Image 1 (cartoon, helix red, strand yellow):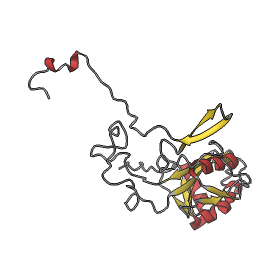
Image 2 (cartoon, one colour; image 1 turned 120 degrees about the vertical axis):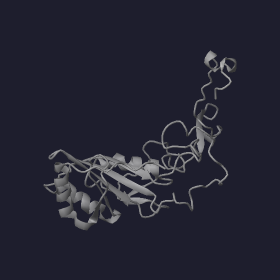
Image 3 (tube, helix red, strand yellow; image 1 turned 120 degrees about the horizontal axis):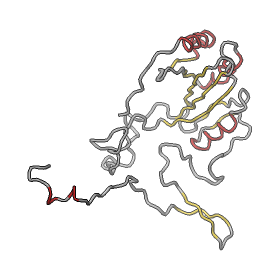
Image 4 (cartoon, one colour; image 1 turned 90 degrees about the horizontal axis):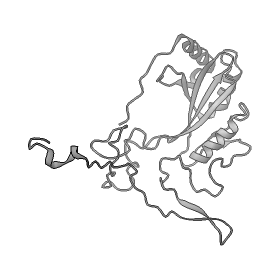
Length: 246
């Protein structure tokens, strides 16, 4: 199980900012735990645009810049990558074959199935006051995740929202040109989703006989990509070991 982040207290600067934000937005926000003295809030998708406009325009906030938007897929959140007795969240103990005895879908109907799967995180910066804040919005519908676009508030949201749409399949309502940004126009699926196959769905190549790019079924097979080191020098010669050595 992944370890929880260490909760730290806010500095006096961010404590004053938190008081200002909460006095203006009230119960629309829920403060998140601070892992490194950072200030973050969770809010409902329906309140995103109104709250974002206040955070931008209010003199005590003045978050003029949207630094980044990123999607999050909480499918299997808190679950180790491999089903083994010695697996950890870090290190090389994950480099073993996963347990296949539990069936193909080991996330559905378990404690790791999230109530709300997709979230969108906004990172805001105030140039005026030199402070930052993070906003997190969960999508209401897992099958059709969507939130309102904030491009009318921060024009920099344009490509950030397109990136989250492309990689996570999160739609931004009101975006004027929501289309793929990093993958090909004919790409199938959203590669940053946790259930997207590591080998992809299709592969592409240029066919000189047809004079165009063609799509074909994936020809490679999934495998464990952890190198195995084989040492054969004298230190590992069985003849040089004492009988009592393990």
